[in-house]
Amino acid sequence: MNVHDSEKVRGTLIQKGYQQVHAVEQAGLVLYNTCSIRDKAEQKVFCRLANFKKQKAAGKIFGVLGCVAQHKGTEIFDQAPHVSLVCGSASYNDLPALLDRVEAGEQRVEGLRLDTDDTFETPLTRRDNPYKAFITIIEGCDKHCSYCVVPFTRGPERSRSSWSVLEEAERLATQGYSEIQLLGQNVNSYCDPSATGMDFAQLLAAVGRVSGIRRVRFTTSHPRDFTPDIIEAIDDNPVLCDQVHLPVQSGSNRVLARMEREYQREEYLECIRLMKHARRDIAIGTDIIVGFPGETEEDFEQTLSLLDEIEYDSIFSFKYSPRAGTPAANYQDAIPDTEKSRRLALLQEKQRRIQLRRNSALIGREEEVLVEGRRERSGQWIGRTTQNRVLNFSAPRADLSELRGSYCRVRVTGSGPNSLVGVLVAKEAAPAFHGFRILQ
Ligand code: 5AD
Ligand code: SF4
Image (tube, rainbow, N blue to C red):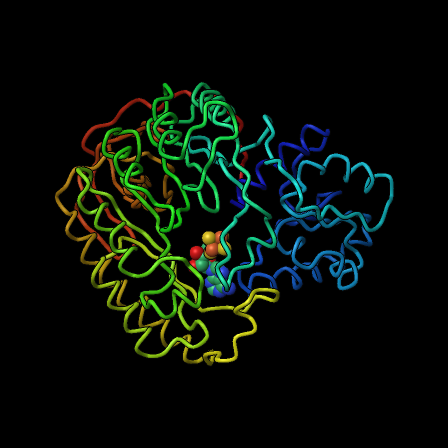
């Protein structure tokens, strides 16, 4: 979501006459987009700002965007006086006006409104990837997980109208994009504000019908709002990818209750059962937090047993990080950091073995991949399967044609915990790309 926000901010700046440069040294204006989901990310921001300080002398203007801007607010001006602008994501529509003030020499310009009904959209979004595009469908979050800072930094849920989402998808398809990832903190609470009144599953299916779009993914979903019609939509429409990310956070009902996740292990397992019984072979991913306050060894064992029971295809796992202003930050029964690290290592090792096993079961299969790039050293192409697995593959020596952006059939010949390897079976001509390409 942050990456896509940066793409939109970039479009907003270009519309205002700015040009993008690729190094801070070359810039007159430096906007730093930030994440505050865990403390480490937030600390990094302040280190980075201190490094930028030396460059203020060169007449540069600095701004801080995103969740740290929203969370810390004007405190940032005190801690880093060389910063002239702080702006949270709910106020990005105000950025052009805020920048006018900064350009006029104003020192402490803030955009910290959360009381907005808007989502932040611009037709000029400058996307990084020429084949796969993010589209925001909902911003903010109305859940109140006791550990999470997002409802405070991104504000309440606001859905974007279905016609505007579909219009953007159609425009992207004409520009040569073939994969779309629908984004939101909680996409399945999507509620169309327009008269069409689509729910999430209907919107998903509608995006899947846009001519030229060959793949549609979505992140992220909340188990509480996960309904069978999402699986039915995937089953019915081959354009919808065989992949669902459904954060569980913990396998223990006691911890889930203290996290205020609004579901129990059994209800979560029911969502998983629906996916496993789908006609399509859906890859399942999740997010897990270890070392939540009061998490006993037995609670943690239940998370480990959930991994064995579900056999996820991928997980993102984190040590619990207390966030100021959230209820859990006041819980007294903190777990020592060394213990959190031990649990995280155990969890990740278990998952590594599961992924090794699951990936090796794919050897011999033929997969369709969207080719995203090439490793110059090994000459291998990098593709992604509908299940979002990375599949690196080689093509016959004689075949030097450009494959980026095309869909190829690849036979899987080997596997590791995080990726597959294979050989090209059949290729398709790369589509002409008419969009904007940022050189990295
Ligand atoms: N500490 C650790 N992980 C967190 N996440 C959210 N808040 C915290 C926190 N305070 C994780 C959750 C969420 C993912 C995006 O980040 O697992 O799903
Ligand atoms: Fe945070 Fe919970 Fe909302 Fe996800 S659903 S953004 S974890 S409050």
